[in-house]
Amino acid sequence: MSEPLLQRVTVLGATGSIGMSTLDVIARHPDRFEAFALTANVQVERLFDLCMRFSPRFAVLTDPAAADQLSHRLGMEGSRTVVLSGAAALVEVAAHPEVDAVMAAIVGAAGLVPTLAAARSGKRVLLANKEALVLSGRLFMDAVAASGAKLLPIDSEHNAVFQALPHDYARDANSRGVRRILLTASGGPFREWAVETLEGVTPEQACAHPNWVMGRKISVDSATMMNKGLEVIEAHWLFGVAPEAIEVVVHPQSVIHSLVDYFDGSVLAQLGNPDMRTPIAHALAYPDRIDSGVRPLDLFEIARLDFQRPDFARFPCLALAYDALRVGGAAAAVLNAANEEAVGAFLDGRLGFRCIADVISASMDRAEGLSVDSIEAVIDTDARARAIARSAILERQTAR
Ligand code: NAD
Ligand code: MG
Image (cartoon, rainbow, N blue to C red; front, top):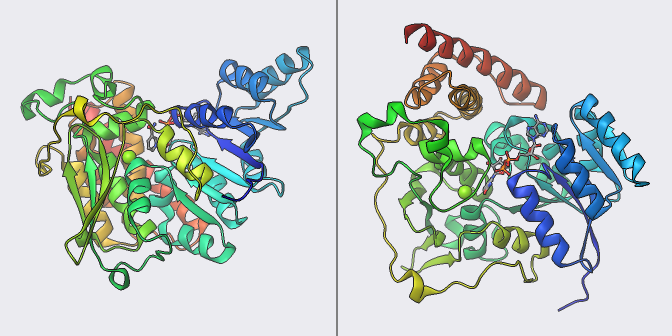
């Protein structure tokens, strides 16, 4: 093994679930990784604590008032961390010439521009922010190819697929004998609930995931299975595989993180305890293997692994995502924008759980003439689709 160089890492979304797990891994390997910049939306307290612990060169808060508070607090402690604010600062720390790796862990479309900036600057891009790829798939993959960026998936399923593919795999499934990609899904907290009871579920029930502790948006996505839908689209772009060759397998234990089925009948899987520090450590150190702090897998304790077909009637969001991928063009961007608006409304108590899928479906029907051919077009499409979704949400509120 070659002597590892010190990697300078920007963590976009440092205060979130993925951001904190990333910093946990970084802290275990001070000889290999250094936190160069840490960013958050508005959480002053948490970012302050992280700055005191990791002494990054830069800290960014999107909100200017929050940035002023952070700057003041750090100044009182004699910290040398430079505090920046606003969307342009996110791009600055993602594309900074001294940065080696960028953890893209902002939730939602808000992560698109800085994540794309990291890709365009040829960084090692550790991609957790699946929404950015769903919105801008072709544009993003073209940017990676043009700059020579190294794209490493953090989503546990895609990280598992990456590990099960040949190490020189270049987005051409057929030439490498890949028949199918099998994405596993826990099925979320409502896998066995009677469908009629789902309308009344609360945000707290939806966010109580059986196997993973995550941010609220992705927790709701897991409960509707839109998370798996977004992951189908993510797999299509990351691995160059047609929608028909991406299959979802419900696997309630979340021990097999995904599988690759080859033409010779071999099926390769990656297993592990459900803890995001495994894919994070894998991507940070790739191709080396480092300690992540994750407990070793005890197969005797698990004893059994179960598999079921996904229930598309119970989880209409999954079907909508396959539809968007087959339609192509801006459909996936519309799906994503409508989903973000609908999930936000559900979390605020403005929309019923089962209406999330209705809002997305109505938005996809109504959106016309939208494009995702340039970054400006993607941003415009995202904004227009959100406006359409907001009116679809209002209609359902007045109908209640
Ligand atoms: P989270 O809600 O816990 O954290 C989100 C982070 O993004 C926070 O640091 C927050 O400050 C920042 N942020 C939010 N809105 C912002 C905005 N408008 N501008 C700038 N920053 C903003 O979310 P999470 O669970 O860590 O998920 C992050 C991403 O990783 C999501 O795209 C999610 O789909 C993906 N992901 C998460 C997990 C998981 O286990 N949590 C697994 C796979 C993929
Ligand atoms: Mg996942």
